[in-house]
Length: 201
Image 1 (tube, rainbow, N blue to C red):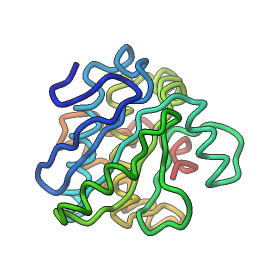
Image 2: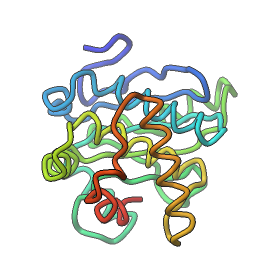
Image 3: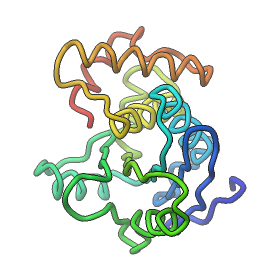
């Protein structure tokens, strides 16, 4: 188990470094079977993305299963299917992200607000089954795909988007720089990743 982390279904401790404070909630134990030290991969990717965007702030990352992300996608986007990654900016109306056990991201947000340490940027949720399938289909390591999707979600929280061609290209370049900084392959050189991520938010 990663230092400072807790058993699945319980809230992990936030770690502060560089541009932000990143709290990782490990809801599905399957992440540990798919990725060595998934909490560390997620934290590094989120911190690198914030640094790339020149932002400082706090983010909560939820490493969930497909069923949890399907529920979130249905509640917040009216889509009854899981997706690889969802981003929930702090200023977005509606409920805060909540794990089924009740250990919600709002608890991490409350701690940060009490300390007045950093602005809370929002939440990122990832679906294990979707992430694994996409990695396998693209011939990538699951850890690399996880890092890319966490960076993608964190960049959304920092203000990046991909609704129009120009902004999509800027976001792809930012993601490539983050992955290079992490020592991981550029997902946009693989070709197939571009079409898959267009729908991720």
